[in-house]
Length: 95
Image (cartoon, rainbow, N blue to C red):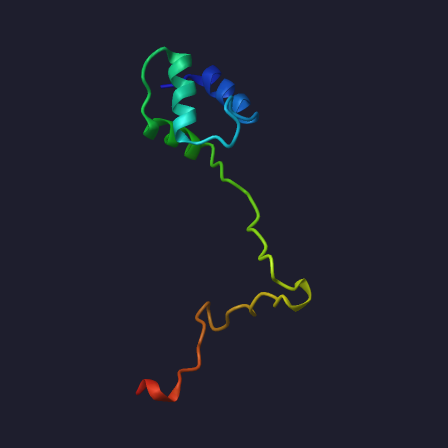
């Protein structure tokens, strides 16, 4: 649908915030493409182009307001035995 020059233009446009602010999504990309191509573009096509660029929203998870940063646990140890993690089964499971 888009040629190489239009793809480069889309990539440049995605580096800046959209006209209404916020983040780029499939609807906004499809609307931008509709203006460029002067024909209707579906939201799915906008999603396809976003996925083609492998763009991901990278936003840190919000911190809990009552959390104590001094008591945050570290990540669990790496799995052993080829990626299989063994868990301790409680006695009352009847296994």
